[in-house]
Each structure stands twice: as structure tokens, then as C-alpha cells.
Image (cartoon, rainbow, N blue to C red; front, side, top):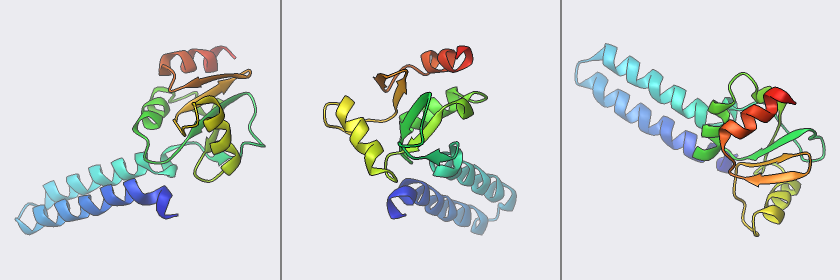
Length: 137
């Protein structure tokens, strides 16, 4: 669990600090806005900002291997708004088989996002290409 919430937890903790500092400085409205922005960012970086993750064994069709806190995964997720649910999302920190599958196609590294479509693996692919494939297939 620590691995999954490391970056989002740090963002949220920093947000609490900034919000408390702003609030104690006498600006409660700005503090609330800052707090909400940091909360939203923490959610986007956490597993909550992604479609429900399955396992590598259950995945089919378009498979997106990802991990929480990965800015490239977040970029892909945001680019796929509206079609992301058509893919199977697999968190490599929760599924050792998924991590092994990524290492097999990424020269031994756990580089994410790695997307597999019809057996064709792409490491950190252009989001537009994945969006196009999800729309058509």
C-alpha cells in the first residue's frame, strides 16, 4: 500500500501544509481552493484516477500496464478520457505477472505505460495512437 500511495500521499500532505499555511495567513477562501486543487491532483495520481485495475490473467483486448504516480500513465489516462474503459488497465505494482510482462518487452525495465494491442507491445506510446485504436476497435 505504501508504494501505491507514495506520490499521491506526498502531494496530499504537501497540500495540507500549504493550505494550513494559507489559512493561518488569513485567507480561508484561497486555502479552500488550494486544498481542493491538491486533493484533485492527489486523486489523479492515485489508483482512484484510473479505471479499475484487473490482473494480467484477466486482461484482454487492449491492455494498458501502468503504476500509480507515473506522470506518463496519467498523461495517457487523461488523453483517453471517454474511451479508457474500453481497455484493461493492469497495475504492475499489484500484479507480479504484469510487471514481468512489461520487463519482457521493455528491455528488462518496468517502463510504463506499456500498451499491448493484438499482441503488439508499445512502450510509452503516443496517446493519440491508443485513443484512435480504442475508438475503432
